[in-house]
Length: 175
Ligand SMILES: CC(C)(COP(=O)(O)OP(=O)(O)OC[C@H]1O[C@@H](n2cnc3c(N)ncnc32)[C@H](O)[C@@H]1OP(=O)(O)O)[C@@H](O)C(=O)NCCC(=O)NCCS
Image (cartoon, rainbow, N blue to C red; front, side):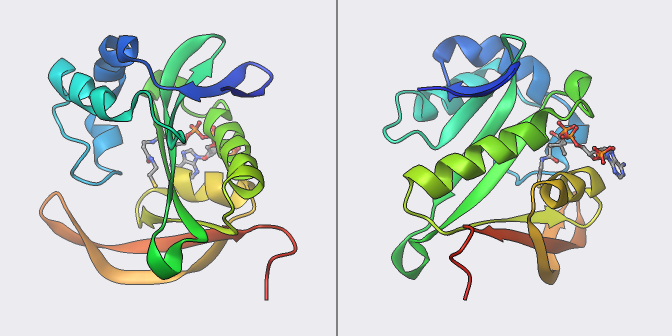
């Protein structure tokens, strides 16, 4: 299965992505924006363990992002449970050499469309640490709405930070 727009494609992760994943992910400018489950330093073993869990998924929730045929990062869409079963949480990163080329904006648009049309969800949401202006910009470009701030909800690198919450509803499903 592949979702594509021009030279950007989302496809299932492969065990052979491990080496490149470890190279790209081992960057504190990336890990500082993500939950602690994304470690720093990020070793080849971390990459292999991660891929062990998230290859051969059915349905796919974690996708690799390819740019010009090269693996450059990940994007995920996790469905909620219980009363949140019509929502999903989005997450993403790409390697620093590929920043500011519009890649994640395209990837978010692709996975959002896939989620709304194939996953029976009507809401996609995420939280962005207060200092991550690039990610907020991506979400705003993709039509996500700032729904407010979870004050001091994030403890990262020994400090408390606000988290800015963003969400997008499936068109025509709003109240
Ligand atoms: C945040 C991240 C996903 C953005 O990916 P990307 O492919 O570079 O994003 P795009 O190129 O599609 O868009 C980036 C936008 O942010 C803007 N931007 C970049 N750095 C910025 C900054 N410091 N302040 C304000 N805007 C910034 C860019 O100018 C661009 O907006 P524009 O198109 O209006 O010019 C990427 O930097 C990344 O992987 N970061 C580390 C992991 C991460 O933060 N994940 C998200 C956690 S919520």
